[in-house]
Length: 258
Image (cartoon, rainbow, N blue to C red):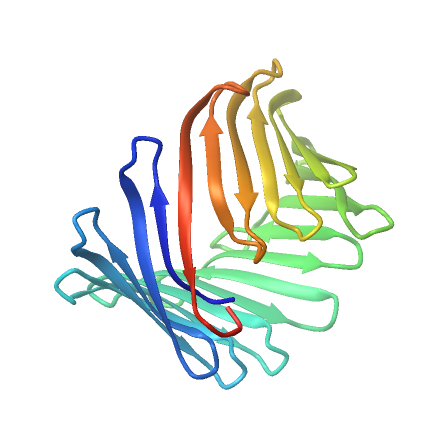
């Protein structure tokens, strides 16, 4: 079901966010209007799509309908993203990324400046799980090696410098619908994050912990029958929420693709 409107109401009863969506005949979202608590327009986002239904642009306008920035995408014949460009209010390029698919297993990721000059390059071999990174001068400076389980989920990722020393390690553990990520930096635990999903793949619980196992942030979600969040609880210490938000959703009368 497409969402016609959504209001996020904080624990103090005030509207934290209010949006209204408009959809085209194909059920694709073509406009989202964000409102202030007073009901005045905060800003508007317009969406455009290619014939395959891939979103190729998001253009943002302020309350007076002045252009303030955009995101643009390009896709290949296999609907794989090959370019992303972010533009400023002056329509200048702010960020420019490209993906080049050499074959089924090799992808090159490029980061460019506004003039199209490569500032960073990553070459990924999906079969071996190895990424090699190069700076703006084309010099190799880092390698990332990933290992996967039988379900093709990453279980370990190590980052090496150009001398072969491990600078970072990411460890992933899976138990039923819960994923645990441990970040190790300079041989010390930097943080631990746990994320639990329901059987539909929706996040229902998230917690971030420090190196001592103390919670530094947590979030809980409750969903309706259509898989959209209708309640969000968040805080620092588990069981002691600092905010509980209610989300009121109005749906269109017919099924469409979101």
